[in-house]
Structures are given as C-alpha cells and as structure tokens.
Length: 433
Image 1 (cartoon, one colour):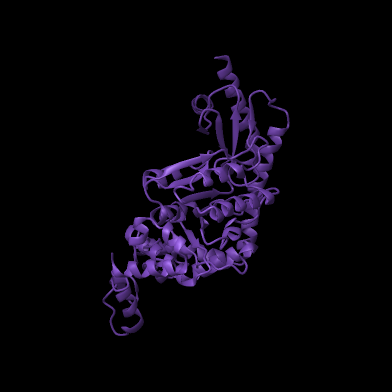
Image 2: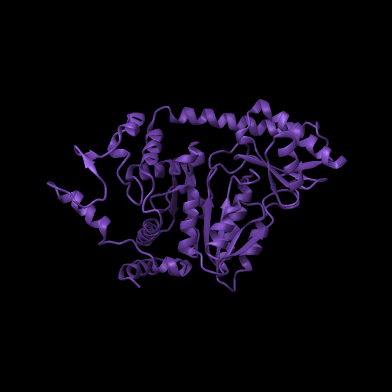
C-alpha cells in the first residue's frame, strides 16, 4: 500500500475506527498524490514568478489560450475562469458559497461538524464516489422498492453489492421506517450497511413529514446501537422543491454526528436545484466530529476524482458560482419554484376531482420534486406505456407491473388535464381490447 494511503487510513482509524471499517478495499488503498504533477504545479504557481513550465495547458499573453469562436459567445467571463483546469476539489469560492447555502437551508446543521463540499460531476458521480470508497462486493445497499434505477448500476453492477429493498410506503401510505429498520437489523451479522435516502423521492415525488423523518433517524440510530456500521447517503437531487407539509431540509443535518457507527454523506448539486441539468455540477459532503478524519476522507475523495475524471468542468462551475452570487438569483429561483408547485397542485386537483373515477388507478403520495406515480388497477403499466406513446404520442415511464411515472416537471400547467385525459383514454382502450 502506498505510504500516503496508509497515513490517511491511520488518520481515519484514529478519528473513528468504525469509519475506517466502512471503507472498501479501494477506499483503503486510494490516496491523492502529494508529490505528483498537480502538487509540483501548485508549488510552481506559488513561487515560479518568471516562467511556469509545469501545467499542461497552453497560454498566450498571460491568459489561457482560447479560440475567438468560443470566447465571443462567453465574453461576460474571463478566460482564466473558463479554460484552465479547475482544482480537483472544485473552485474554492464555489465550495464556500455552497457550504453557506447548505447552512442557510438546513438549520439542523448549525453547530455540526462537516466537511467543505467537494465538487463532483453532478450527483451520479457523487454516488459513484460513495460506491468506490465504501461499497465492497457483497455489502448490503438498502433503499426502497420505489427508486432510481441507476442505484443498481452504480452499486450493484459496478461494485457487486447486494441490493436490499423494503416497501417505501406502509398500508396507510406513510414512510415505512419499520421496513427500513428491519432491513438494517438484518445486516447485524455483516456488521455494515449502506443506506440511500432520496427525498424528494424519484419516482414518487414523496418527502416524509417531520415525524416520519424522526423515525428514519431513529431507525438508523437503533441499527448503530445494535452494532451495524451505517454509511447513510442523503441523495438530495431534488432538494428545495417541497410543495406541501413535509421536511423542508435534508436529513443529513439530523444524521450528522448521530453516532460513532453512522457516517452521514450528503450528495446534492446545482443540476436540478438551480435548473442547470447539463452543467453537471454536484457536491459531496461528509459529517464527522473529527477534523483529521474529514481531511483524510477529502483526500481519498480527491484520489477517486483524480483517477476517474481528474477534475470537474471549469466553465459550469464558474457559471453556477456567478449565479449564486447574483442579486436576482433568489427571486428568479422562487419564480421557477412557484411554477413547479403550480403544476404539482394541478395534478393533485385533477386526480382528486372525481373526473376519472376510482376504478382505474390511485396515486402514491406526492408533495415535492418532479414526479408522481399512478398505481394502475386494470392494465399493465408497460402495455399502457406502449399504447400511449404509439397511439397518443404521450411518453411516460412504466415501473414494474402497475406503476406509471409521470414527470409533471416538463409539462405546462394548462396541458396537464389533457395529459391525464389521454392516460385515462389509453386505459379504457386497453380494457376494451
């Protein structure tokens, strides 16, 4: 093992041996080079005032070399904020501004010890980092039966983990914290579990209420007290889009420093929060009371980034930082939030109106995010999906035998009634066939 990796492992072990035991083999072996090209370039940048012949970019007239056909389109920004490599951890100011935003929007983080957010290539990359650092072949990865399919690729396929699902909802359609607890306690022999919490949930658009959130935290605490090391990941992809009574902040704040056997990780980003999906700017943040442990986890995270993408895209980080600092940012974001809330409320009003009866579908609770899910009673979700797309030109997502996901996020409010009329018509067509 490289001595740098060993030093990082020693820091983690000294800070919290349970967190060290959560690391995968790759997580234990990875490190960020201290004496490689990047560190030598950084030293030269600080001290080589005459010529700096270290970094692998081209310069001209003291600026990164660039093409006019690109810079002409981006003239509001300096070439130094576009074309040179961003640091592997991301632009320092962006990291600081995002941390301040996290503290504003998550009051339960006040007084908690957590790392500076590290920039990722959006949220999937953040989840992939978690998988690489903590998931070993055969580890249990726990998440609900209604979930984002990429979890299986990121953890199950890439890292050969065992997927453990539990029903998202109880019979009375509240969050199934007992199911989560049972799944966790079933890992006592393993002594380790990775838990993925995704609120607002994709595909259902559900965010738990305050009491449900407390039950989730209590379940994780109980598992830790029973001897299970828990890596708990708050996948906050749709954070902030809370339309009704529900949690209004990430559970990361409540989970941070909950118990020595609990490592809380927050995955979030600008992609959906700030409506910049293609910019691919996300963040990964760790919580621990031990500063040396946090520093070591950051170095290991940078090692994963260096070994995979080297660093995130610089222009998109610049664009996001500029937006976050703009005086108009909050008002513009609120305007878009209200549009999304109006669409969600319109869907619920339509489904509760009685127009479609109660014999063809019901819907799972939704109060946030981009999506909602119908539970079909009389036809197959896949049959209906195919019929809708080929007969009515309407695209939906079939999930399992009975669930149909509809993204109201990409449908204008005044088009929603027509959309659900077509879904209803499609069901009646199939019933007659």
